[in-house]
Length: 149
Image (cartoon, rainbow, N blue to C red; front, side):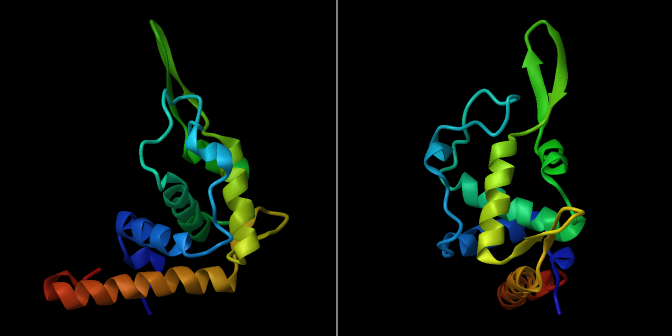
């Protein structure tokens, strides 16, 4: 069985984002069209589906690094803030985005909240592994030389 660890992150996140669009529990809030992803950013994301991509990336990080909390995920999605002539400093990403994605993944049944942090449920593990397995099957069909993924 193919798992998340066997597929490159970029391919997996793109496909999981497409699958999450089909789930009615995962929807961007009204403010998502105008929100920046952190104080280190100057503009909101240009991709219209950025919410689903971020949800898929967070979902994958919970799978690989779990249990994780909001602060740890904020650090993962942070970056350097441009302070003009002063040296850049690291700033964490938006906690509201991470919190809402956690809540939506919990409502969908893919993630559960424990005392140590958020962990992937068996349903969530199955969902991600099935997406990874389908990506491997697609790679084997289209280019047999790429079946190593």
